[in-house]
Structures are given as structure tokens and as C-alpha cells.
Length: 331
Image 1 (cartoon, rainbow, N blue to C red):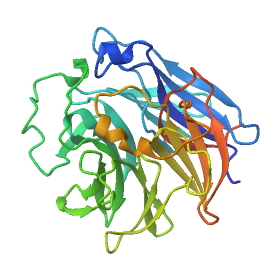
Image 2: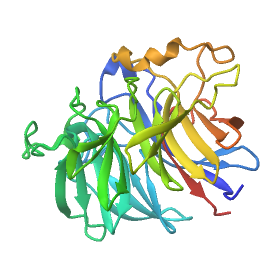
Image 3: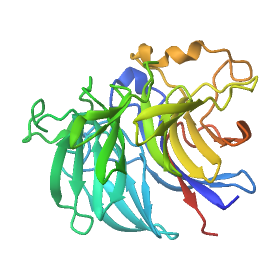
Image 4: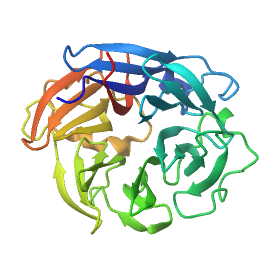
């Protein structure tokens, strides 16, 4: 085990979030630390208040997929990107723009801050020093404003659903930026969306994370499968179901992935009520231990042995949705 602990980003559901409607589900953003030795979770940072960059009432509060740059943490909410100094979590910067809506991830790639503005189907590229926008890229290869209005402050809008592509995560391949797209179940090159990877592999299953593992790409599907892709051929070469040999399969929306050698740390968010029932068709799979549902989980899976080696259950009320998992090696 090379990491002492993990950072987990996400949010806590409002008790009446479903009744309030889209864009109001989560009332408290949370950054947790998981001690891999003790298995204990602790809250490092939380955020429940809104502000000028959020809707006036019932702002959706969640920390989404963050990234590390040495001892600097870039941590997004739905409408803001924070920079913190670790381990003291001293806030250094906060960037926000009217084109930010339902941010799902932030990445530091080639000294550019790459933000998935999921609610308007765009990827926004910032200067990490000033926060200025360098360019905006639509994830369907269209004009970034073909559907939305550049004069609207989308931070103040609760929901823009339905999304045309719903970009989740960005990675670099062949010196170009690629993004996973939940709506299309794939990953595409942002310079040429015709260059794509059919991650769902004809299973019509939504895709989230896309990260490198040795010389291969690994993607998470919301049904819990890990999909291995050959970057040269763009073809799926393997699929792993971590619970294929387990009697007890957790119910959860699979999102959040960290690779440590052959150990894959995978996030399973607590299921919430949704009107998009087609996204939950995988729940027809058998389940025993978790038949009444479960809290959010982090699962450690040894891909070389094809075996789950540990399951870390997040205590009720601490975090319901998991967006990202990062290493944490401070005492």
C-alpha cells in the first residue's frame, strides 16, 4: 500500500432534494479523508452556504472531482474552482465565471486549468495564475454558444437539463484533450469529436472517469464496470466487474477512481431518487447484502487478482455522492 490515505470529494443529499427538483439535490459539499490503515473517515472541509456565484435559494452544494498539483489542491463546486494549500487547507484562490454550471471536474494539464462545465456541455480552459478564460470548447464539436446564451449567468440557474452531451472528465491523449460524455457513453477528442472511444461497448451505459493505467486507459461506468481501452486502436480490450465473484453487490452510482499500481479505488455513490430511470437499469442485477440500499462506499479492487480486497463504508450523513478520489499522504 503506497498511500497513507485518500481524499474523497462529494456532497450530502438534502432530505427534500428530490421534491425541490433538479439542481437542488445536495445541500452540503464535503471533502473527506480516509485513513487506509484504520479505515476511518474524517471531514476536512465542508460548504453549505451559497453566495454571489450560486442561486439565491437552495444552492446545489457539492465538491466535484478535484486534482492535485504537488501540495496544491484544485477543488471545484458546481460554480467555483478553489485552490487550497495542503495539508493546512489554506485557501489561495477562487475562480468563477458566468459560464460555469454543474462543474463535474477540474484538471491541471500543460499548465492550463481544464474545467468541465457540464451544465452547458462545454469544457472551459483557464489560466491557473489569473483565472482568465483562454478558450471554451463544446464537447459535441459545435459552437460553444449554439444552444446557450453567452450573456446569461448560468451560475444563478439551478438546472439546464436535459444536457446534450454531459461531459464528466478530461484527460490527455496524443497531445490532445479528450472528454468523457455521459449522454453518449463515450470519450471524444475535443479537437475532432469524430475521433471517439465507444467506452460503453454497445451496452448503453453512462461513462464517468477516464484515467491512465500504465499504457492503457481505464474508464468507470456507472454500473460499476471498469473498462480497459487500448489508446492506439481506440478499442475496448477488457472489462472488469469488481463484484463478479462476490455474493454481495453494492447498489450505487459508480464514479470516482484512483489507481495505485494494481489497486483500484472506486467510488460508489448512494443512490438518490431520479426522474432519469433509464440510467438505473443496471440495478436489475442480483443483490443480497445491500438489497435495501447502502451508504456511499469506497472499494479497493486488486485488478491483477480480480478480487475486492476492502470495502470502506462512509458513515451515514457524512457523504452521499462521491465525485473524486485522490491520494493523501500527509500525517
